[in-house]
Amino acid sequence: MKQRNRILGPLFVVLAFCMSHSANASEVSFEIHGMIQVWVQSVKDEINGVENMGILSKRSEVALVSTNEGPVSWVLMFDLAGGGGKEMQDAFITYQFSDAVTGKAGQFHVPSSLEGIQGAGGLWFPERAFISRQGLGDYRDRGFVAMGDMGDLSYTVGLFNGEGGNANPSEDIRRFAGRVNYKVSDAITLGAWTDSNDDTDDVSSANMAEFSASGVDIQWHDDAWSVQAEIASKSEPADESGAYIMAKYAVSENLMVAARIDSYTIDAVTGVNEIEKTAFDFGITFFPADAKGLKTQLAIRMGSTEQAGTADQDIEELIANIQFNW
Image (tube, rainbow, N blue to C red; front, side):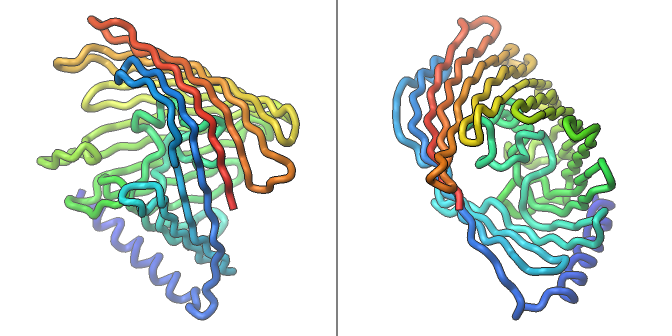
């Protein structure tokens, strides 16, 4: 772990040096972007004993995005619907050394599962699949990555605190994560990733637990059809694995339909039997032609959880997502 600090320290110094010699404060410019998501949600959840219908302010994101010319760029994004009404999501600076190498430092998504690193505003369904929802994606941390494109191959690899977003380090840097994508053809892209957190000694926070995770994914598309599938696994404290496949069809420029089959398994550990989750999703997305930035989604999710020694528990969920981007 000390070795990682000796490596990461000079990288931060080099990045800071490059930025200080190429960015002029008087030339700083930026744009304000944002996204608002409002859900009307109906849930019948035997797992948690919930049956209700309500309105949820799911996301209220505001982002400052640099528009400077040159190798330096930065992003600062908050979710006003987050914890305490002001949860920081992203805060990072990048420096492009070349087409093949760009450095990024700050807080941002850890390179991991395909759906996990995709922005919430562009998802095929209001919610991600089990893989990301169980902790194998959609996860932010503070660290440094090198990323770039080399022909049909793109990569992102870096070191992180291992404490999650909005948390200062209490130990040595201990998290390593990396992802590669390979464009087989104009229609097919393959991906693979790994994410591991070293032994955390006496630290008890759930965000800092030791684990090792990895996965592979594939994307395929033609003019109207798109298919995306992932397989991922995780070890410590219990072995976990999941997979999904989903397809969408563009009926027109403004209308899209999608379906997903989703599964996840958590192996038995002391005092807890094996848990198997399965779900089927069907969704419709509509972009009104006369309302730029508006996106509406209607999604149905039907699933169940099986655990040895207990009765199967079902969940039925209907979500109407009204989203506006600017």
